[in-house]
Image (cartoon, rainbow, N blue to C red; front, side):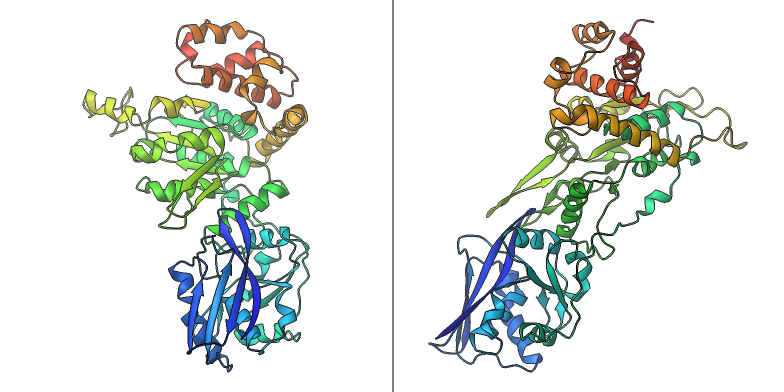
Length: 510
């Protein structure tokens, strides 16, 4: 009996574990036995790999082939183990040099004709392999650009098992491509200019504050006031992602089955699911393997829920924990995984089903109880987690004549970048990058309290604001001061922050 091994990676969320794929031939009737807790897709690899090897003009062993996936106690799922299985089996019967297989980590699915197909999770998988000490990888040729985002790793791309055999024999038919560093992905949403939004000056300012401090935003008003236009232009105002953030975001999108052929994602993502989205699609899920949902695909970017009351109650309430912790943990029968979900939530809602409640220009056709039920779909605990809450006024003039054009995205983005830099410098000792990430205890005890803090205490005593809401107003006040270029929060900044939180502004004395 002869044996050999190759290496692949088992993924559980963003975490990867190096898996040794052992193959032993001989000692029994011709058949393939696979052990090591494979799922159905992986267990069927024995038939895929056998047909692929035969199509490539090679011989599959006519003896008992035992394939073991180590560590044996770790559940393994997916088709990306195919290349490692083929390599281990061929090495065990002497078709390729055994010494070549130990230095490689392989990820890729094979077809019955020997073609190598793309798989999900290439980026986080190779990052885990790099951390485990591997320096050379073999991946599908179509995902070579994604694999090269892992700096310091030598990567070979193969289209067919014939190419794999050449690589394993030290005669690659495809030139080695050294890593040249990440390239940015252009986001289509960047073409949307904030200057297109006519009027709504308070909402534009709230959007700028949200961008500067990474605050959540809720816009409430009749249809056609520009809520969707404003939300879709928020990503263009946000600064580029830091390198560590870009790698994390790209890894999440790789796990979500999105190929990164254009390079590293360096712009904040924008995700706007329809209100019919299921709970599993929003927060993540799957039968045995939990995949990232919309909130994780919006990590370090914007999650926009238009017509928010139309979303299911369970889906909305599931946002509570991620809004506070920045993570979502999904449990399945065989594993529990955590995905990052530090997104900016933007909600937009009409006042009632017909959209005209409270309007002086139009008559609302909804019954009072219908209006009440519609408003109650957004629960108090969810709204309490939203930093900025504002009512959009109706347009009066300027739509046809154009009015005075508002500031463009580039102008606002420059102010946001300056405010972010001030926050980075001030909050570095507290391990935070933006005001939204500062702990409440730090706000109240370690940073200077703003002038006029008695206004907040009065609102707290009168039940106009919760303890969480108090911290959020303080964070917004600091962001407004940062946008103004100030090193301390003045009374005017605090009053503005309170006015941007719907429901407590009326408690502030004139």
